[in-house]
Amino acid sequence: MIGDDGINTVLGLELILLGEQHYEARYCLLKKKGSTIDIEIKKTIQGTLVKVLEVLPKNFPVSIVFSGKGILYKMVDAGPDAQQEQLAISAFPGVQLKDFYKQVLEGDKHAVVHLARKMTIDPLLETFGKAGFKVFACSLGASVSSQIWTLLNAYDTLLSFGGHQFTLSESKKLLSYRYQQDEKNKFPLKIADQAIDEIYVLSYAAAFQLILHDKLTLVLADVDSVNLRFVDLSQNVGLKKKAFLFLTGLFVSLLASFLVFSHYNTENAGLAGKAGAQAASAGQVDLLKKSIAEDEALLNKMHWHGGYNYGFILNEIARSCPVALSLTEVSVNGVGKRGTESEVQPEIKISGQTGNLTAVNNWLFMLKEKKWVKSVKLLGFNQDNESEDYQFNLLIAY
Image (tube, rainbow, N blue to C red):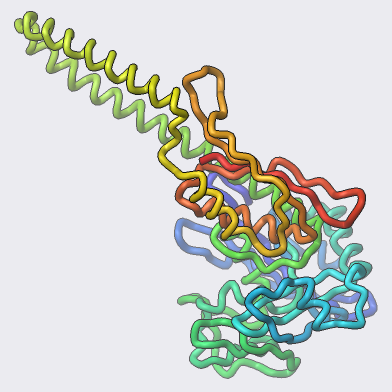
């Protein structure tokens, strides 16, 4: 469910492709309560997709992980400047990538690349949509578990669950991955202090990353239809949060104003006999107001926006921009007028193109974390008619 404070309940689903139109579905319904995330429901179902859809809880945002037959993976070496497209080609040199969805999880020196045929995944997502399920995140294989590696009670560098085996560095970065179907964990798993059956690790991780989407770098396949839906959702959630904070701030301001007014009203009753002193004070107040008004007019004329240097801002933008994005225009509007000439709203408009929608989404969250950024808006996504890339426009208020 989506509340004023963000996404607080998510259905995490691992759909295992068994072949011959049969599936195994493992799902966790997670609910965020304050600073804790609890498992409300967890269950496993086997059968046709129709049977699975009949049992799944409805009316919740869905984060899905596809695994099983047809989901390919391979480990490759990855340098610090490697791009996902290059890593996918290196992992599967003989594959026509345009026919596949890809997902890359990078470690310090290695990466695991997952592929799945579009003709396999698209009909499944379409069926979910027709059944009334809204899928906002789509991942492939076990890489999504990286979102909770630091929370799992792994006592050495080997993390094993449900046949998935990850070797991690001391800093919980990927070193290697393999899958052995019959391999089980040697001890009961816990996420923080919450016990969990190892077969639900992936469905838990999928729901976890959608609930905390604004604090994590998401592990997602490049499924444009799902990722665009997620971008719209995150923008709407951001607007709801801002509205809630605005109303809360307004209420606090009114309450403070009432208390201050009551205090000064009481004080004023005791100062009724000091009319002469009040007259002198009133004259000083008028002079002070006039001085303040003159200073404010001077600042507005100078287009003062808080003291940030344009070079600093452009450097921050360039340093945070992912390699997968190509910027074509950065326009700095120092005086964005809103209603009257005295109101100033500095803005930066950025245009660019990319073949990776996930990279745009991740950059949005990185920019929002900058202290000098007030807000970031995605103005639009348009596919270039002459290529498969997307053109995007961002608006940063600072």
